[in-house]
Length: 253
Picture 1 (cartoon, helix red, strand yellow):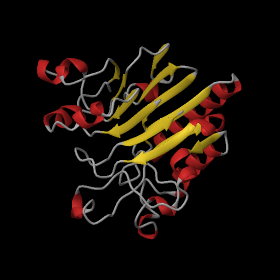
Picture 2 (cartoon, one colour):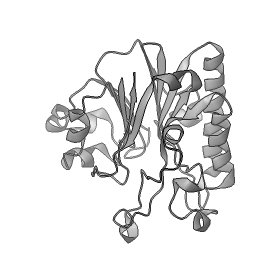
Picture 3 (cartoon, helix red, strand yellow):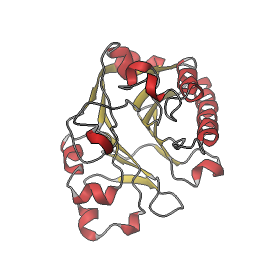
């Protein structure tokens, strides 16, 4: 099974740059896009034709904001839009699909903002999701959480950790919530396979950060511990252009 996650920072802009051709050419079983920033009906005929797989779509109520879409080869046994909390679901941040016994969460986690205005909302989002996953694990479900976590977990996950200790995305309280998932039966699949590798998945558009290698790893696959034997690789496609993020690929046996 091949899964690709990618924050494409606006699906209409990505389609205009033919950026999604690369993703569809990889023939993924699931393609999880975040920050689509559009409703389905806002796509024109040509843009719809460029979407080469069936999909589930969860837009935000607010126009031009947030939103996720999950594309799939085979119809999932179950599709759930959101995670059952109106405060979070109005922002179009979550799609759950169940396929071959695995529940895949495609998530665009909240951004805490420069002024930390939304940090509390972000932490409450993490908490609600973890409570939901705890209940699913108790039922014996296997889970993959992927998407833009908007948090770098450890100093190795960003170029300049010391300078960003007070920046949302690397605040101690944000990092602590990622750690809590690892203490509740999840594994960071990329870091498990590549414990010392320094790669990034997001670069600010400012200061030529991508060209200078100044980035953050904030796009993750957190998987249930029981799925680890099935993991073949996690690949960060840092050379693929089209967004301020790059796609990340998980392959399972």
